[in-house]
Length: 187
Picture 1 (cartoon, rainbow, N blue to C red):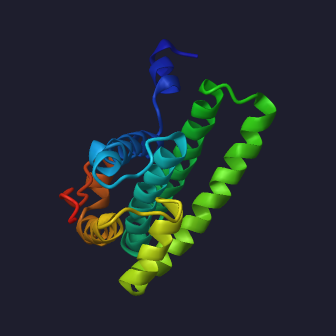
Picture 2: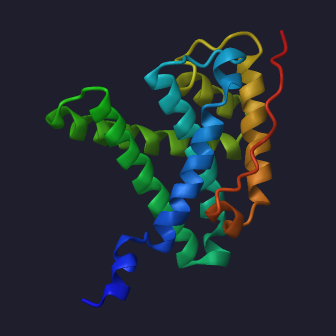
């Protein structure tokens, strides 16, 4: 093998590199202190998963809408993002000490749960605020959202979906995401 080909062995393919940038941006947003401090999202492994799942849904929702215009490129980006999310969850479970046998089961359960959340959030976005609020309360707040937190998070999700709708796939592939602003919770 010529020496010039060696760097290409270590370079990520375009969809995987784009998914890295995209996943990094959505995780940064999902970890914003505002969700935990002001909205009362539990600052636990489960609460952080819920916020990553919510933001992952928002990004995948945008990618799904772009599939008609972008075709295979958008589909490859969405698949690469999904794969990266669950590879990261696998790695995190291992770092937390989950045994090898337990990791596969937990990741499978997380993936199944994520797909259920996608369906519930998709239905909620297409329906009334109450539908979206119920899905958010059930998943993010484990059924016990604080005063004002649920309405604020519902508004944030709808506004984020709206802002992401005008974000190009090129910007997304560079990790440039336009989520809604985080605002104080009414009391």
